[in-house]
Length: 181
Image 1 (tube, rainbow, N blue to C red):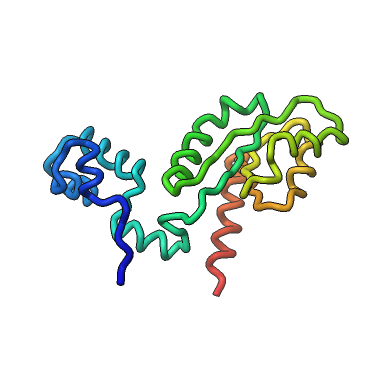
Image 2 (tube, one colour):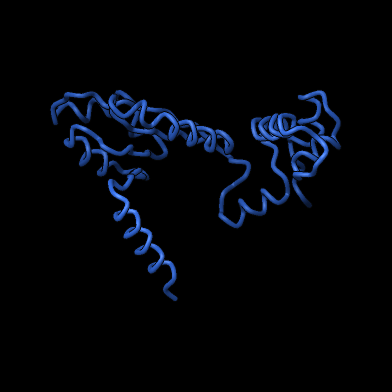
């Protein structure tokens, strides 16, 4: 027996004061409304946690639970200098994680700190209690890299190529690796 959704088309329609048919049409991408209305419906559905059957199928194929059992906490570790540079990155990650009910918090590393003080700082900011961390590019001072990479939790290093040929070379290596039988 299928599990009933907690958030339905009727819930989204009620939130916006629209009909269920209008909401359904917007989420299926059918014509007959302004793009502003369609965008508002899509954002509201996402905020409320509504997923279409196609979205749920897609998430299941990727082995992602559409309705998470527990809310997870992730950190974006960055330096003070990179905060404005990573603003769009943080917004994108935050929106995506929020759509799954998870939380993404930015953590700014101190500019100067001794090696012996690092474990205390990590504990004070709850880094060990996160479900995973994203490490922003250009962590300065470099002394932070090793402690961050040694943390016993999932880590993702966000790295951007410095030159176009690095990007091309990386893409080529990934393509070769993925195309192997």
